[in-house]
Length: 453
Image (cartoon, rainbow, N blue to C red):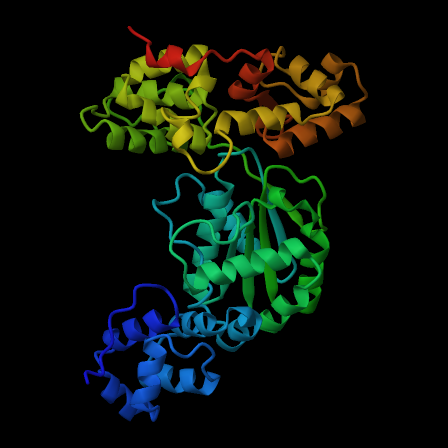
């Protein structure tokens, strides 16, 4: 009888063993000779007749096939899904725990990346929270920092999107299984000892992306930090409602001044030095409309669009999708009048990341208390750049009270600092999209689709 069984059709133990053996280029007889496991036992495993194989049997087979740590974890979890903690503890490594691979280079965040990695390289800052508006690039910056540490130092990185549900998403594997497991422990907050036993004394970085979805996780994180001396944690969040004693790192939108703010020194000079938002938007333009050449006129138009959308990377990417329907000049006309129409993209309903960006931005404004909302509205009427002193006079509050409110608005990303004279007072402005939200006017998207010259 032919000892080869039919190819596995699922991700169970039987299919994993068959696939691993074929990748190793072995027959069942050859694998039996190398592993000392009988041909009959291998055949029974590959045909799904054995539900609870001995751990030693799996180890012998894995060694014979020279399986990687990640493949071993996948094999053991397929045999016993309830032993996640034990499996991860025995095979926890940088190969198993890795951050997601970026889809494109990081744009315009060199200073922020150096600041973040500098904190992570130090001995004192072990809990860092990146806070800012939706779409501003918190996750992307954390991803770049995590990838740098993982590649440079071979540090395990547990990347945990807190808003996702277990079992949802792409193809299942050991990394996604571990992510689901860590997420459940963080959310539960009472079984953190299992994760502690896995990390132990190993240097590890945990990234909790979007901790707004699990605001009660604070005690579990502090317990983890106390138990694992070489553990560091990055949190990304839209607001820092309850600081856990770590360091807050506010992330502002990309700088997006108008080209007229500093004209080129001489004909032929670039219009974009120091304007990462415009550089990013131009990369989107070249992808969406390769027929549009980056002339000085187009570059100036793109820079103006970026200014209207405050240099928020998520908003720029969404706005670029409208280039399938409009020219850059038409896009600028819309950005000058109703910029909120651009920030969800052409087909926002196709996104699977939850609420649309415009709704997330709206929630950032409506979540303010009435006093801070009133102050923010008054700040939109001040000439830019305004100072905390000017804000106190406009709002009618004390200087100390106004300073706290301005600081709150800055952490939430609703206002931003503007360049000022060296040694002069710090100046601020309210984001253009926030001004639009405060005016509470958002025409139907259908008007944009039917827009004409």
